[in-house]
Length: 329
Ligand code: SF4
Image (cartoon, rainbow, N blue to C red; front, side):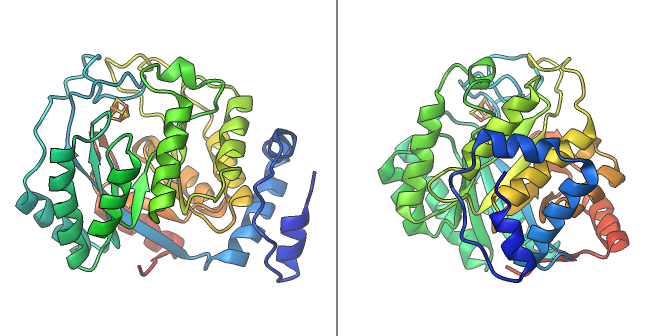
């Protein structure tokens, strides 16, 4: 395995970012003894980031439920009976009220999620207005709206969008077991449109969906070998929601989740790695290990789209106990 990045880091020299990670190399990271993996992840993390700083984002569902896609983990798909009701796109004023509250609670970035396969142009007009106004509050803006055309990506950029989230979800090999209504290549194309428009990319995946370790290796290798590393890499633990096809999936070993975070940190050293969905079910000790493994971003707030998340007070308390501080935008 090449140790170039870490060897350089320890000597204080930033190694160039790599986009040629082989699966053998990524597999070797996952296979490291846990203390060695954590040491490598910490070494990389401390070279590129202040280790006590955590970026805080808030995610608001601006259009909930009724999605035509069939993502097997998602309670918002209209195909599954999960009790999530389809709602209309939120009004601008209501979104701004949420953004102000998030800012007051310490969030530097406001993410707006809509359960669409892709936005219609009429809907995009409304979202662009939201982006513009949230930006005017002095927050970073992020949206996740499904697939985008090149033109739509440019319109969002012109409205002031800083980040666009579009996850690869898993490895190319396992992807078809989870989603059949759009392809891996569709996802890569949206990511290319976002990148070409000059919007930062937020792209990661979900573990614990019944995939093998090799699939987790494949997901990390694919993310790390994108033409540019996503600026933000959310690593989610499956939230097993009743009514979805993955409701009864056995729980993944939390240490395997920590290993996935560490592999993301080592292979994408300058990206912010975000603990996303699944934190509500995670022990504080597991979350602390994730921070040690190089995670340096969380979603704050009681809900993540439609699934529970630790409340702001619980997050504040844990961060205080760990001596972590909110990263400035
Ligand atoms: S993950 Fe997104 S695209 Fe997939 S069903 Fe849920 S809302 Fe729709």
